[in-house]
Image 1 (cartoon, rainbow, N blue to C red):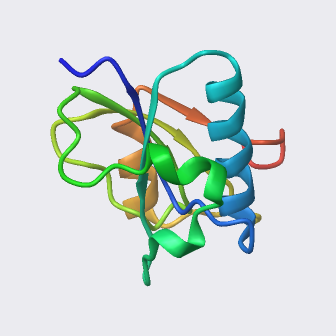
Image 2: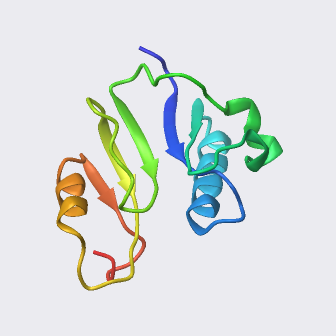
Amino acid sequence: MDKHLWLRAYCSETHGYGQIAVRFARFCLQSGVALKIQHIGREVSIKDIPEDLRPHHATGENPNPFEVLIAPPDFKLTPGKRTVWFSMWETTRLHEAWIEQFNRCDAVIVPSEFCK
Protein backbone atom coordinates (compact mmCIF):
# COMPACT_ATOMS: atom_id res chain seq x y z
CA MET A 1 0.00 0.00 0.00
CA ASP A 2 1.16 3.53 -0.81
CA LYS A 3 1.97 5.50 2.35
CA HIS A 4 0.62 8.76 0.95
CA LEU A 5 -2.66 10.42 1.78
CA TRP A 6 -4.41 10.85 -1.56
CA LEU A 7 -6.34 14.09 -1.94
CA ARG A 8 -8.79 14.26 -4.84
CA ALA A 9 -9.65 17.90 -5.40
CA TYR A 10 -9.62 20.84 -7.75
CA CYS A 11 -6.45 22.51 -6.43
CA SER A 12 -6.61 26.05 -7.73
CA GLU A 13 -6.75 29.26 -5.75
CA THR A 14 -9.22 30.72 -8.26
CA HIS A 15 -12.13 28.56 -7.06
CA GLY A 16 -13.76 28.28 -3.62
CA TYR A 17 -13.32 24.52 -3.31
CA GLY A 18 -9.85 24.89 -4.76
CA GLN A 19 -8.87 27.39 -2.09
CA ILE A 20 -9.96 24.96 0.62
CA ALA A 21 -8.05 22.12 -1.09
CA VAL A 22 -4.88 24.22 -1.37
CA ARG A 23 -5.03 25.17 2.32
CA PHE A 24 -5.71 21.55 3.31
CA ALA A 25 -2.81 20.30 1.17
CA ARG A 26 -0.39 22.88 2.58
CA PHE A 27 -1.48 22.07 6.13
CA CYS A 28 -0.91 18.35 5.54
CA LEU A 29 2.54 18.96 4.10
CA GLN A 30 3.52 21.34 6.91
CA SER A 31 2.37 18.69 9.38
CA GLY A 32 4.63 16.06 7.80
CA VAL A 33 1.92 14.11 5.98
CA ALA A 34 3.08 12.43 2.76
CA LEU A 35 0.56 13.70 0.22
CA LYS A 36 -0.45 12.97 -3.36
CA ILE A 37 -2.86 15.34 -5.09
CA GLN A 38 -5.16 14.06 -7.79
CA HIS A 39 -6.26 17.28 -9.50
CA ILE A 40 -9.87 16.96 -10.64
CA GLY A 41 -12.21 19.26 -12.46
CA ARG A 42 -13.91 19.84 -15.73
CA GLU A 43 -10.83 21.31 -17.40
CA VAL A 44 -7.82 19.95 -15.57
CA SER A 45 -4.36 21.43 -16.02
CA ILE A 46 -1.32 21.10 -13.78
CA LYS A 47 -0.78 24.82 -14.41
CA ASP A 48 -3.81 25.45 -12.16
CA ILE A 49 -2.02 23.90 -9.17
CA PRO A 50 0.10 26.36 -7.15
CA GLU A 51 3.81 25.81 -7.86
CA ASP A 52 4.63 24.66 -4.31
CA LEU A 53 2.08 21.83 -4.63
CA ARG A 54 2.98 20.65 -8.14
CA PRO A 55 5.65 18.18 -6.95
CA HIS A 56 2.84 16.33 -5.13
CA HIS A 57 0.62 16.03 -8.21
CA ALA A 58 -0.35 12.41 -8.86
CA THR A 59 -1.32 10.76 -12.09
CA GLY A 60 -2.77 7.32 -12.41
CA GLU A 61 -4.91 5.41 -9.99
CA ASN A 62 -4.80 5.75 -6.22
CA PRO A 63 -3.49 2.39 -4.92
CA ASN A 64 -4.85 2.98 -1.41
CA PRO A 65 -8.26 1.82 -0.21
CA PHE A 66 -9.12 5.37 0.94
CA GLU A 67 -9.11 8.99 -0.22
CA VAL A 68 -9.98 12.52 0.86
CA LEU A 69 -12.32 14.27 -1.57
CA ILE A 70 -12.84 18.05 -1.52
CA ALA A 71 -15.54 18.76 -4.08
CA PRO A 72 -19.14 19.83 -4.62
CA PRO A 73 -21.80 17.20 -3.97
CA ASP A 74 -22.28 16.48 -7.68
CA PHE A 75 -18.89 14.71 -7.96
CA LYS A 76 -18.79 10.93 -8.01
CA LEU A 77 -17.11 8.73 -5.45
CA THR A 78 -14.25 6.55 -6.58
CA PRO A 79 -15.63 2.99 -6.69
CA GLY A 80 -14.14 0.73 -4.02
CA LYS A 81 -12.56 3.56 -1.99
CA ARG A 82 -13.31 4.55 1.57
CA THR A 83 -13.91 8.29 1.35
CA VAL A 84 -13.79 11.29 3.63
CA TRP A 85 -15.61 14.04 1.75
CA PHE A 86 -15.42 17.76 2.49
CA SER A 87 -18.32 19.48 0.77
CA MET A 88 -20.82 22.27 1.12
CA TRP A 89 -23.94 23.44 -0.61
CA GLU A 90 -26.02 26.36 0.62
CA THR A 91 -29.51 24.97 0.24
CA THR A 92 -32.25 23.50 2.37
CA ARG A 93 -32.55 20.39 0.16
CA LEU A 94 -30.12 18.08 -1.56
CA HIS A 95 -30.68 15.91 -4.60
CA GLU A 96 -31.44 12.31 -3.65
CA ALA A 97 -28.38 11.07 -5.60
CA TRP A 98 -26.12 13.36 -3.55
CA ILE A 99 -27.57 12.03 -0.29
CA GLU A 100 -26.94 8.45 -1.45
CA GLN A 101 -23.31 9.31 -2.20
CA PHE A 102 -22.77 11.07 1.13
CA ASN A 103 -24.27 8.06 2.92
CA ARG A 104 -21.65 5.80 1.31
CA CYS A 105 -18.77 7.89 2.73
CA ASP A 106 -16.92 7.07 5.92
CA ALA A 107 -17.22 10.74 6.91
CA VAL A 108 -18.65 13.94 5.45
CA ILE A 109 -17.18 17.21 6.68
CA VAL A 110 -19.03 20.49 6.20
CA PRO A 111 -17.89 23.99 7.20
CA SER A 112 -20.95 25.08 9.18
CA GLU A 113 -24.04 23.95 11.05
CA PHE A 114 -26.17 25.25 8.16
CA CYS A 115 -24.53 22.80 5.74
CA LYS A 116 -25.01 19.92 8.19
